[in-house]
Image 1 (cartoon, rainbow, N blue to C red):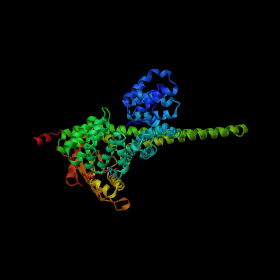
Image 2: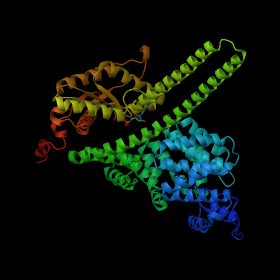
Image 3: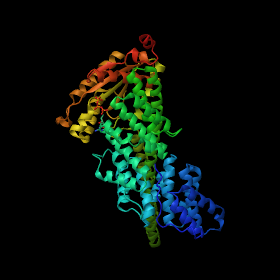
Image 4: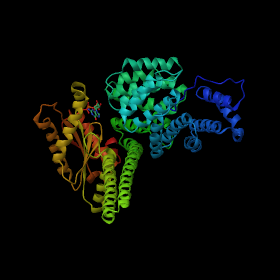
Amino acid sequence: MLLVVFATAQAGGVSDPTPSAILDRADAVKGTDFATFSRLVDQMAPHEADLAPIERSRLHFLQGWRATWQGDYDAGRRWLSDVVDHSTGDVLRLRAMATLINLLGNSHHYEEAFTRLTQLQELMRSVRDRYALFAARSEASQLLSSVGQFEQAEAYAKDMMENPPAGQTICFGAQHLLRARREANRLVSIDPLFERALQVCESTGYQVFAENMRADIAAFHLAQGRPAEAVKVLAAHRETMRRLDYPVLLSEFDATLAKAYLSLGDLANARRFAQSAVAGAIPNEFTDSRRVGYEVLYQIERKLGNASAALVFHEKYMAADKAYLDDVSARSLAFKMVDQQVVARKAQVDALSRQNEILRLTGALDRKEVETGRLYIVVLIASLAAIIWLVLRLRRSQLRFMKLARRDGLTGICNREHFVEQAERVLAYGARSDRAACLILFDLDHFKNVNDTFGHAVGDEVLKRAVEVSRRALHACDVFGRLGGEEFAVLLPDCSPAQARARAEQLRLSIAAAAGPHGKPAPSVTASFGVASTVPCGFELHRLLVVADAALYRAKRAGRNCVFMGDTGDIPDSPYLSEARG
Ligand SMILES: Nc1nc2c(ncn2[C@@H]2O[C@H](COP(=O)(O)OP(=O)(O)OP(=O)(O)O)[C@@H](O)[C@H]2O)c(=O)[nH]1
């Protein structure tokens, strides 16, 4: 997330040495002149004890802002939480909350980030300061976008564009709007609005934001099957981006460039940018750029037939992918958890007010001395029922969101992360009991044409239908998952290679013969299949995936709509391979 950097217009004069004027000045220059800002904060810090409470809070906010900017998250969190929890000024609290949310998101403290977001949204209702609201909307939009709450994220971005404070433009809001739309798959074309926002960002000196928008525009072209366009957007600005010294964004640029060059068949450039994306990703943090970088490096080695190097990169890709997905699901789990806590708190308040009402009635009846004993029983039963109802409701929603975190949102089958978990469990059992298992990978053919010809919504229906017919052809013990896009995997326990081939054929025929829902006409689609067996490959999932993927690649090259078995040549450390290479 980019920390929102913007300066207030109402800067104080340097000639006025009052603490309030120094704080004003520090606040005004913090986004444009970090050295002066830092010096002013250091100048004020020794006098903290002499400051009025509100000025002390302002100093803490600026110290927290500085620590956040410098990546000192522990210190930043302390300063900012102090302002949020103890300051008496609502505008300052809102600004501190916005910065704190940014820090919590960056440092992966997602549950606290969403708890603070709930507070922020509440406080936004009573604050009128446009500058503080602008910062709050910016953070809310980014955080909500990161957990797929795109409608709310868009609404905040639009508010930013419509109500910028003095000195601000559509630049920031447009940037958030673009990202939310792209990630929600709701971008149809690059609206002239975004082109205009790009120019505004550049002409007002916010180059980083302009480049951030370019990263999204390029990713959009790539997703739409226009890799050359993606290269055109990024290559011309890569040098500017490098000079801006913003490694996270540079790594994002490089990951997209690597993917685009791979699609264009330019393996040398694909490798160069993939290596740069991996090198530029934040150390010890699993970002999307690292994941994409390793995936591209793996694809390159696979295309070149370097099985051992492909295996090395595949392992790294799998580790980066898992860690990335862990982070994504930690984020959405935290969101759902906080959401659930809000619902639970509301339910508790409801239950309490119901109990109060009962007690009030009880009191009234007591005074009238009417059948008090019987009423007490009713009161007790009602309270108990309310509590049981509350517990059941919480339990049900807890189970529901745990299930949701494991399912693919579109098709309802295992998502990639859950598939890997389940498949590894089944393979471990197979290894212990010495029972062969097989992995089928399949990928819909020319699926991009379906999207391009009939639209994304029909594409989604086709995906759902393919899953539905495949499901009917599977056994209860098979593990079925969507690995991403239009690629699926099935792990067949207790299954020989010949049986797996027959099962893959059966899946192929079912998909090719599938009609639309209730027999409605729908675009016909086929799929290509790659099969790997534990008999030659062993029971490690990533090795089975590499072998099945190589077979699937051959199936695509052989004209699609067919099944290929992984052979010994696909096994990275197979003796056959070294013999074949000679
Ligand atoms: N409708 C829809 N499309 C998706 C989804 N996920 C990925 N896609 C699209 O799937 C397409 C995959 O295209 P390619 O990777 O070029 O593959 P292809 O067109 O199937 O071609 P081959 O695999 O070579 O046969 C892209 O256009 C993606 O935008 C999704 O959830 N829904």
